[in-house]
Image 1 (cartoon, rainbow, N blue to C red):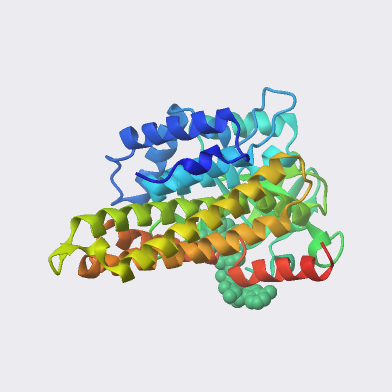
Image 2 (image 1 turned 90 degrees about the vertical axis):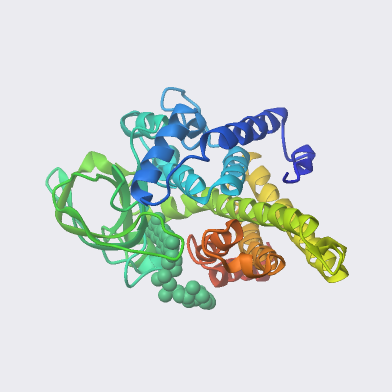
Length: 385
Ligand SMILES: Cc1cc2nc3c(=O)[nH]c(=O)nc-3n(C[C@H](O)[C@H](O)[C@H](O)COP(=O)(O)OP(=O)(O)OC[C@H]3O[C@@H](n4cnc5c(N)ncnc54)[C@H](O)[C@@H]3O)c2cc1C
């Protein structure tokens, strides 16, 4: 049973403890029978179940409430809990939030009502389309063009590595409108998946399968009312969304790490070697101690960043970067140790730790690679912040 003592830390309120317990019980009862052999179908089913369970109401603001805010601690608790149970369930929840994050933060009442009502109910899936073949880390350099034409913008170009690509009902698309060079010439748009000219150019397969695609935009016309925020605000919007969701990637890594530690404890206390449980060997105890320490240190960074954002800090780039860099890196190490403790069974296809070993890797690349997080931390530290 994963350590729950962190929920008593001062970062949390009673509602967070209630949420964590209720979701843990729900996940144990509702996720075990999901068939992962077809990831598209699994994700659709997961979103539907998460919607029916009411969990997706945390993924986006309430369009019918005048002042509704995302609660980053709740997002992190949900991602951590789901990741501990099922990586694809965490992914499905996360994408409902990331894909609509720009609408939650910058959408008009009409945009919120049109999309968030459905994504919060689990009846529509969303995606966040920022990366391009020539601009992943260097997002300010993106090429996809949005040309103004009467009451519309016409999008032309490509996006790649888009999670939920192929199954999403709507894409938040960042495109160059050209008000200024670089970051100041980008705008954000809502593009429904069935918009003529928007197509799936390629489905991408990765080591931990989930829906991913390269998207093509050819003469793809969206109304001016599909723009989020103002012309030229797209880069600011993307960074604001990442400022909220980056800490939640760290929380997912924390969930994977907690599951790996649970599996390692269970294995090392049940397997007999040299006439005693594996856990009697001091080197195994050393691994267990390192894993527990890494997990607590990661949790402190994750929930500090989340609490700070919820406390009203306008930007938490440094804290979120620290949480993501550290928690994803340490989770990789924790999971590697869990694989080692499992011996041959650790690399056997289908074992829990083998799955975690594949699932953790991409978290050190997307939503800002680890090296980019270091740049953010260093810049702010050198500037005295
Ligand atoms: C599984 C998965 C899901 C994804 N989902 C989405 C999604 O839903 N939406 C979306 O828009 N994108 C998504 N991405 C794209 C992801 O954000 C990019 O892959 C990431 O930003 C890195 O870009 P790149 O792959 O082009 O690598 P590059 O930009 O070519 O970088 C390669 C490497 O160079 C190093 N590097 C880069 N910049 C610096 C720097 N400033 N200093 C030092 N070293 C540096 C890093 O080690 C980096 O990993 C996803 C990617 C993956 C793998």
